[in-house]
Length: 200
Image (cartoon, rainbow, N blue to C red; front, side, top):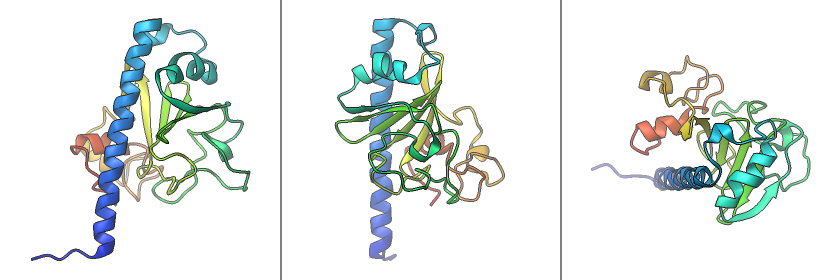
């Protein structure tokens, strides 16, 4: 019989909780876009795509219960839902521990839902921090996840990758702690692996 230590039990619970929160956020995001499409037509026909804040304010945020809408970021030090003062350090890390300076960078507009989910938009890329930027760990693949707007659908970054690519340490952006920009494709890996976290 295998006995689990308290840290391993906590880690397992945290992973399960992250999957639950991610699934809920992803479902909410999809529902909000379907509602916005019903009101405003196909996504690619929405005007003002060069201004992320206008898309957030006029099309996406109205479909959520929103706590706060944040102005478009000016740099990668405060990419989205930033409430704290400037500390001279980047907001998020990749799984490798390297600071994320791109894609979350200048030009990201964001909002916080009433239940603490931070959603950022830059062009046709969407970033979801499932517990808000003021709570840790602020790491790609742990509480930060990446999505793309493709046609009228929201898809996880890496949705069209093979399972091997999603987990490969040799592929940039893969959901692997040794990959360059590791964590970019973690939402896709979690979904492909039946809403489980198997990489840390």
